[in-house]
Image (tube, rainbow, N blue to C red):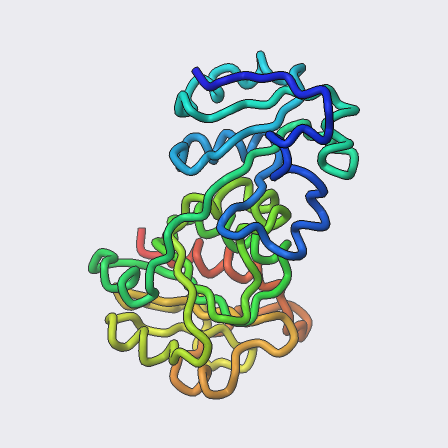
Length: 268
């Protein structure tokens, strides 16, 4: 069982990493992150218990979370704070009543991650995804449809931002991820590791429903609005998703779900 301790003072040094969460979200936590809510905590403890540093919870939730807490390493402290103290520590009303402090995984190069995947693999390559809701939604779809990895370019937001983790229902903690360096050529990387680059475009002649994907497929997704750069598009296979009444825009997270569903089930 983990170590339980009661916190009555919001200034208690033991809970300092949980203090003023929203302000610290903006400046980062030097290799740490905050995860929020019961659903996310369950996913975190299931998928990466060794990366849980400490918890801060409302004691009213202790019994409901007993099975989860029992699965924590013994050295992990669980701080118990009544709602008023919890809110004072966090700096806002924390109606979910559950916070976890986690340690980020050691970084791995995109080349090593892609090179180590099976001969049949599907990955997402995200370019310039700066919206945390979209980032979380994409990871949720990646987990749901069995994507083998997610590659982020240098302009993507942090998937371990608290809101992105929450929207992903914890999927960002389990899907293998690597980040490209500034200026790293994604098309060359994919070619070198045997992946066919698949780019979604409303002007593509080939439609997703008829797509026969390569054994190793990388789905490239760009930010809503600017999309993928012309240089990236020029070195990728373009595929479109037909839409009704001449509409030509889908939310990027929605697009990821449609494409991943097709790649997983089209050949069954």
